Length: 452
Image (cartoon, rainbow, N blue to C red; front, side, top):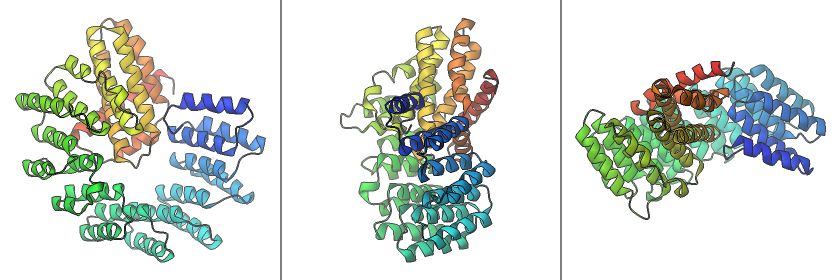
């Protein structure tokens, strides 16, 4: 389930069940996977099986509370939680899941009440505190968010997530001094992690504070962190020069150059495509940077009307990428290009391969952590790929080829509400967000094909 391949996860689960070795943890993991994919009926059926077998534990209940909570079904989430408390198995995870549910629904009194119960029972942990900090932060109630943060600090359980949540909340509220102070405190105490740096540099990029880069420890100025900075920074030659001094910034530099150029500078886009290709020849280049360079190069080639070259750019990249989020990006980007070229040229094998890649990449991204920026980039690329697929399907000849491709793409319309919500709320540059919105609209059309 964590790998994003639900049919394979279900197959492994079925084998474990047949051998009689499926336990509460096995059920909980698959319930969580189906919950994240938005397939609540299957998650509920698995939960019912686990309870009938007498192996449902606190984590099984918590997984279903979380699944219903993430889809906004407060009644069912509360009902499962109540059953867990009646059985005396509700733990910090169960409470945290329901605190999160009410927090996201905007019912902060209920969220606070549940938090107070967990604290009184002595089971509130860092996750419980972090969840309530997040709820108050997203509601804009920074005094209460700060208060819960301070309590976590006094108890010695504040971790990277606690800091990250409050840094993000102050940043979104426009209180840059507070956000900067917390960021520096987290780094000074050794609590800050790569996510802390991404959040802080995202704020720095938005507010033109490029000098914050120097405050991030070099070991945390990773290709992913620098790429996130490039996507949110003001596209200018000044920012480009700032990144040029960073050792692992090649993918970020090229993405920023693409933003500076825009789609109308054909000569500039051709030069950038060549530079991306040259940079990717470095043997020691990490997989993330390699995929992002290929992505930027393919964008340039498509903008210049060289779709066939864009598709060819992806051949041979597969074996180099294993990390889930990066692989999802590679699959959706290559799938989009193979599909469009295949449909335009009437090549069935390439069209079907592209459609399957696009679908697989989207499914992979949807089951990854939605608070990870790399997941958001993968999802945005996938939805953008669906927008391009719609146009290519409309123009495809012969029409029978489009009829064979469309059902493959439609499989993604069965679920994915959480992923769509994440993209709709994300702060992304227009070259990601515009196509993603169009792709989401097409997915909603595809739901009709499935009769849902």
